Picture 1 (cartoon, helix red, strand yellow):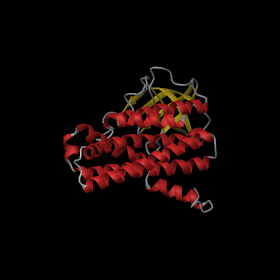
Picture 2 (picture 1 turned 120 degrees about the vertical axis):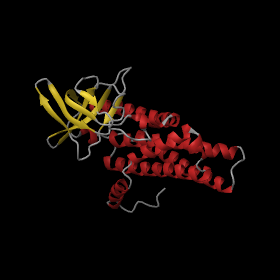
Picture 3 (picture 1 turned 180 degrees about the vertical axis):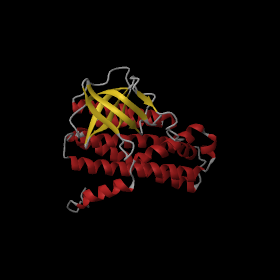
Picture 4 (picture 1 turned 60 degrees about the horizontal axis):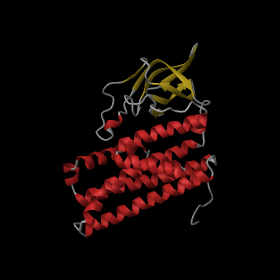
Length: 295
C-alpha cells in the first residue's frame, strides 16, 4: 500500500513538480487526520499542511469561548491561495498544537508579494495572516510530531523529488536513444541511471518496511526517513548537475518545460535540511552498535 502511494506521488511529480507537491500535501493531511482522529477530507477539498515554524513570525493559538482561535502570521504556506483547508501548527504558550482550518474565513488572508521564488513559483507558498480565525484542534499537543506516520510522510516528499528528477533526466536519455550522445554524455547517463535506480530501490525498501511495521519504533522510522531522503536528494542533485553538464545550456534556454522542471526541483529539494539532517542521522547512528556490513 505504501509503495502505491509513493508511486502515485512520483508519477504526479513527474507530470509536474508543483502538482506533485500539492498532491503530497493533501495526501499527508489525509493521513494525519486519520491517525489523529480528525474529520477526513471530502471530495472537492484541497488540503495543505502548514507546519513550518521558524523563530519568527509565530502563529499563536488561544482558547476562546467558541473554541480555538488563531492569530498571527504563518510562513511557508504552500497553496496559500489555492487550498480550501489546511492543517496548521500554532503555539499555545510552550505547547505546539495542530489545528484544522477552513481557509474560506475572512479572518484568513494570504500576504501579497510574500512568495518571490522562480522555482516552485506556482506552488504559491507565501505567508498567511490569521486574524482571529476559528480552528479545530487535531490530536493532543505535540501529537503531530510524535505520531508514527510523521517520518513515513517525510519519505513521501522524497518520492516526489524522485519523480521530478526522473523527468529532468528524460532529455539526456532521449539524446542517447537517438544515437546523438558522445562518450561523456553516455557516462553522465550511466551515473544518473545508477543514482535514480538506487533512489528507487531505497523508496521501495522503505515502503516494505513501513507496511511490515507501520507503528514501529520512532527512532528506527526517523533513521529510515533521513537515510532515504538523503539518498534521493543526492540522486536529484546528481541528475540536475549531470544532465546540465551533458546537454549544456540549450534545453535550459530552449525547452520551457525542462527549464521550469529544473528550477522547480532545485527549490523543492531544498526542503531538505542538508547537513543539519545528516548530522541528526549521524547522531542517531552513533548511538547504535556498529551497523555495517549487514545485508
